[in-house]
Length: 270
Image (cartoon, rainbow, N blue to C red):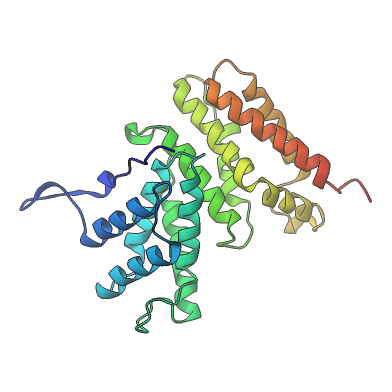
């Protein structure tokens, strides 16, 4: 498996003393830890990486904003299909459950502190969302980021909620992408597919739950909507207006959705 070429160039800022490409000290130190930890076959253990990050934050009396910023930037760079996406997600999950260093100086020593960590992470993750190709960036960054968000939800960092999936599906299927470059159009659909590939089973559970609730309690993810998404993914999978990778990924998403509906769908059984 190839080495990941990671950077935090977007977090740099001009410094009149040091020139272009300067970084906040915490950002840079945390990046160095994560860059090595996220490499395939890295010898750095999860607990070791967590403790090293905690050490940086406690020594500088900092909150988790630097950690969040670096993680979210790297999430856009790691390919959606790469195992290090899952590795990064688990690290973020473990940070919220770690009591800190052995010296008792912890940033997570109270339930309120842990709740604050997840709340700030959710805010930062939401604020970091941008459209494919925004500001001239590689459209694949959007796809990678949607995979990361789907994995975060799948790891149970927050209560099950379809908001992220709905955002991606609306962006892909309810917006007009005619006239957009093929790479950007493909990224919209591949980004939506990530919620099926990495969180589809949990999402379908919400479909089942929603069908059992009173109308006003439903989570805006219904069985009819699920069927509609299958049809949309199938249409994209046979479209000449997207690239080959997009056709393959959306076809896989449609197949998975149909299987989950067939094998998990007890809606019409009773």
